[in-house]
Image 1 (tube, rainbow, N blue to C red):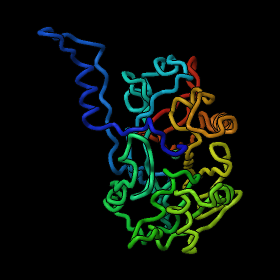
Image 2 (cartoon, protein in one colour):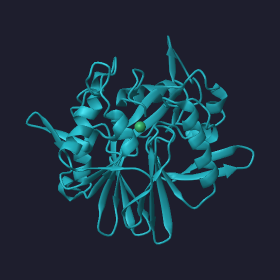
Image 3 (cartoon, protein in one colour):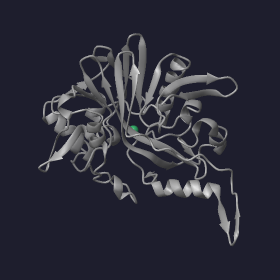
Image 4 (spheres, rainbow, N blue to C red):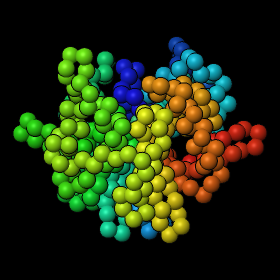
Length: 335
Ligand SMILES: [Zn+2]
């Protein structure tokens, strides 16, 4: 996700209740009648869920879900309405014409390593989003969810960010006694050299981005950063593979165990609808390379026995890219 836009808002429980009630009944004077056909209610994601890839265990730890984005006017509405069967209600709010997204963090457990992938928004981070103060200096539940899943920050061996946008680096650091320090004190933090060097350039006024100051520089200063370029193996069965597009230094994370494969795709795309329409506008600063990267990836992995693990699919998040006769590419969701 390219930062947070002012039109992002979390779906509150009151919104959910209002949506489901409005779908069922409309009251006019004393007349009660059915409005549009009832829509299935949006189901919030569980705080923690798990799946296996061979001998590896992957735990999805929720940061924020039900993030609502008004669908772009540049995308024909039929793209959505023709695909309600696999998008609604979890990935598309048909009544409001909103895309629904999630921010979550994956924790990979290999035989002897614990690896955190894309560590979320973070607590106490400056996120100035007009009209949505809740994202600014948030004290989110992620660290509690992480602990409730049985993890301890001290035991994490590696932290990987597919790229360095704010929603993928937030829990790199925590605020302690007025200083930003690494959340995972014993981990190596794998950062794209291309993206880190771009982010580390001073701006016109000689300062640095808040994300760099709060989430990247403290890790480098603590000697925990590994700036990587090209393909890198960080543990047995865990490889970082460049997939430039959404950012020039964007990575994917490939894992292999006992013949089973999964790929963590970061922000190669955001909504699952982009799998069917890879050229539809998304949250990319530079759309053309991002679209080309999507198309290349979908060509390569459609109908393959490779589990796809995206960063922003609302629950259910993971699954397979499949070609469906008469419809095109879709995402078969597993959980
Ligand atoms: Zn993102």
